[in-house]
Image (cartoon, rainbow, N blue to C red; front, side, top):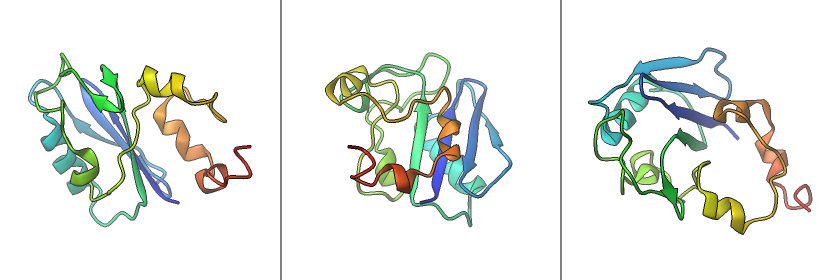
Length: 132
């Protein structure tokens, strides 16, 4: 499984994917809306192959949804349909969603940075017999 990892920061959007050794950066800031971020990432990663997208976002998340606009970026993050924008049908969960973290059992793995996910064989981790 190839994963596109996006780390949304106040000064840069960091982008990396399985099979790509170099981390790419896009300048962000007060004019960076969710839509502009997606467009910039898609332009930067044109031609890359990936099966899933994971987004690191430092902000308030409730029930898997962003519920407050970031103070250091543009507007449009609340209610933005990231899965639709990236062409995926299923909605993922955000790392800062305390409700989701409390609802499920302890994690099999824990990472300090969302980019650390690239070090794991996620296909192996997602097999039902591994998670028992």
